[in-house]
Image (cartoon, rainbow, N blue to C red; front, side):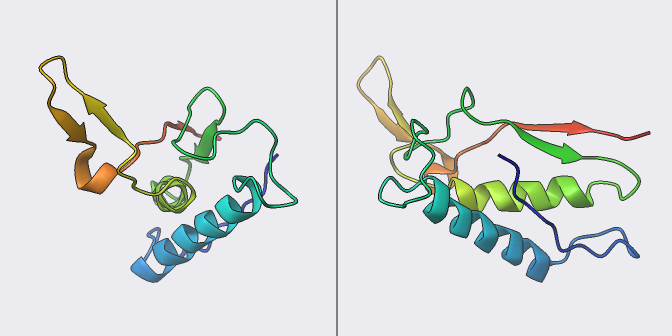
Length: 115
């Protein structure tokens, strides 16, 4: 499945805070549509909790516009897989550790250039 569009300023080759917010909100909307098990559009079998890199490939063009599309993809994935305290680990000594930034999930982004 591929559903995405990006609001960017290609004239100045940068993505502004408002555009990052739009990408974040788009990620949230698509999460509720496709990664919510009670949604009629739920993708059967996809993890509804933590980001699972074996289920998802995020690909961003890293071409003439510099890192604009890549930065937009980062904002999008932050909305799609938000920070959660479920992103945690218990160390061998029993210490319970939540991921940085309140459980920020790092998603793998593949980049390519059309050049």
